[in-house]
Length: 524
Image (cartoon, rainbow, N blue to C red; front, side):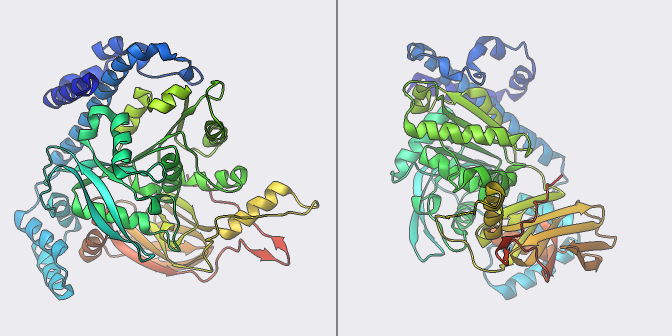
């Protein structure tokens, strides 16, 4: 075994046995770890690419400190989550048993009977059932190591999905998940080895699933293949849904960018090594779609263009990431961009401190304001609101040619055409008022968790300037249980549901040859 991996594994175990001591070292700026790690902890922007190849002797220390830093962060994150759970009341054991039966039962009639029993035992308490769902164990024991399962796609294909389970694996415990798109047509083993090379010994702390190339780089008419894949993973492996991360390298990083923009609510963080979101007209497209990432931290690492060994692909990656960096602050996006040497890109050497910070994150709480620009119907989900019926035709073409005349503003015209082809959904909760803005959404469903509104008071829903609902919304144990069963998610669950038919939609199309763009609503 590589001495860096062995050392990291040892430190990981030591941190697990002495979490409080490690926590003190993490929070104390004069700790032993800070003094010993020195400049190897992080590389300042602009100087990251200045490490020479002669510094290979420090690579061992790099791997050593990377393993230790990330291990501590991972242990602390898990410990804090355990502490939070420990503060919650202990759920009723019989209620947990009935909840597990409900989740496993395919028969609708049996589930209705179980729902009656659950509601009686819980005395109608949504919180009591929520605690039972958190304690439910509905996963089968699995052997550690690499395995695969079959996944049927919406297009009729059957794909093999490779995954790796850490050792040891306890199906009663939750495990953080890394979703890894491949670097083009490569074997799952190759993709898994890339992740292992980036994380070192900490690979054994994570479940890793390889996204099939057909899903990572392809398109379907609904866009649901990736969400179907993650749902299937959750059903087979006990995943911590608040700690799901995307990691991609080269073409896999391109795919990771696209997946993050399309389904940001599913992830806690994204690492893209030498990649960028591959959109047409990026100067106009980026300001629109990057707004989807407001609550999703992205760590992007690329080759320094001043490095003489940087190739054409790396120069394109650098140019796109520099554009994204210039747009990030105005759009309130959590984007960390780091330029490193071409040799570091080739060796997948990620600066450890930003990586540690990303892997220690948890998925953000459900916000009161959310928005989404999207292309495929399955991506029309913004936190607690989602479109359930798409209006018009889906933009499925891979290319787009826009030829504005000399008499119109070029950038404005391109921006308007792009918006005319995308769908839009936003929601804002202010007190007891819910305001929706939509485009290309014929029907919208509100899935409201506990805590966003007062369910004992009247709620007003306004959609595209028109009031569509006024009255109380009743929390429902059945709504919560059925959503948990459908999505196989047992935290941050909706307790009330309301369907809104959209009568008047914003028009992003053309009228008499003139584009009529509607400005995006910036979430607070």
